[in-house]
Image 1 (cartoon, rainbow, N blue to C red):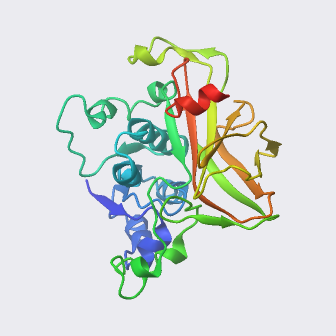
Image 2 (cartoon, one colour):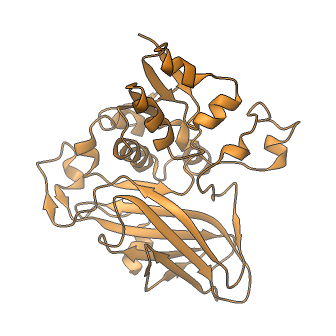
Length: 295
């Protein structure tokens, strides 16, 4: 049995000279495995593999390097879960990790080994989503001819998802509406109870609470932003320092594809540095606990 580890983007793999279509047509590989650069929806690779009855295993930890650099403790366990749930909902046949070596029993990586392969368990645990889990850099210094990542030929041309994050901020022009797809693999059906969880501290109820957080380069005092999810304007919008928060009703956010719309209403430009979604089950407190209590 053979497995091919590829870019998440089939197009980028082809640009690198990997003839994956021929491999599949001639039945030369048994399993496709994603490398985890997360530059496009993983569904593209999954759909390609399933066209040839090849199972697809999705890498979830390479797409979380931002947590190691930005804040090693914040949202790491929840971020792994979010990526795994997204993969399962997209139709993955399995999930995988790469170069993940927990050193202590209390390390979050040790815990997620018993969680990531269990979609039913993940569905009742807290998750942490971002528009850009990977921490994509789009600067010429990184991907230009002499850049540190210049070996990724054609990388930027194959990006097919939002890459807004601390390393790639977005300037919001006043009066301009920006729309970004947001994929959430969580089960968001309110009022459903499940069997007892193997993680009882997080509860057994599936009454989800959803918190949307927008981070900006400067304090948000005086900044007026209209935020809508799937056509529903979120109100009220709370602020704390450089962040804006809104609680989202579970029936507004969908399991699967969502559309986020953000418009800066105030007259000054605003630099958006991150978009995060926290989903909490069973009364477990949000990571952004102070913001949630302000609601």
